[in-house]
Length: 319
Ligand code: CP3
Picture: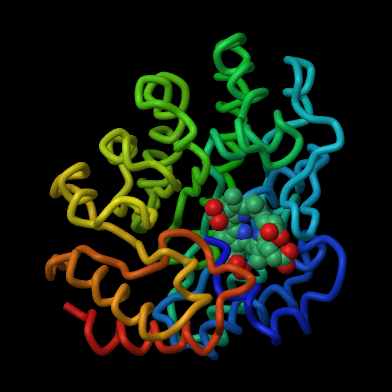
């Protein structure tokens, strides 16, 4: 998830103005930003400072990240001719900064690093809609109306995701996450037909690398069983679905990650503490639980509250 960085003054100091893609491509700053939350909070892993759209940007599709808005494309994906804008990613040439940042982070930190890539529906949604969407009208129109083109688009996006993750693991990432954050916009039958085959291919090919794989989306309570079928080792659960329900839906095959409501980290410790304990209790002592927020840290999250969450989870949560 977009994690601790954006609520931290030390992040804002290093980040400067403008697009974060330039900061991501600057290994020195990206390394420092990756390490900031580890130093401040003592969390158990670092997550690479990058974005799900970085590889698509790196192959020259034409995408930017606008502060306060998110990923934006001036010329969205509209027809088969746009497939040529999604050539295969050659990681060492197209994003050499990625491996460089990972190696520098690992040289400096005692914690493992988590790599990540964007899932097919979420990346396609930015490319087709041209900006964050509430209704996903255009991307669904392409999916339902031109299924053959949809699958070719997802094939290209899956290839980019695989090349990205292979490069991250090669540089030392100990775990990878596939973020299909907006897949919850689909009903299960549609997810199964249009997205699951591509998520399965990504997770299967990355499985050969031997690192644990997490698969996450928000509002995916109805999709948890299908997302589990895609083959990850860990399923990320947003705050809407109690972990005990998620456990029933995913079965014994996977560990769970989550699922504190991020909004709680903007308020009072009294309420937050109760809710952290609720998540731990809801897990019921199951060894397969990675405590996390149910989505990313918010710009309004209070650093002192995040620090107390980490401490409490370390006191109470280790199995
Ligand atoms: O936070 C971190 O340092 C971890 C690295 C990370 C970022 N993006 C950096 C970032 C990760 C893991 C992501 C993943 C990502 N990006 C996802 C999947 C996970 C999720 O949160 O659902 C998605 C959907 C995106 C797309 C994206 N990038 C959005 C919607 C936005 C928000 C725009 C905004 O300003 O509210 C971004 C921008 C972004 N990516 C920020 C960070 C730290 C915001 C802060 C900034 O602009 O400096």
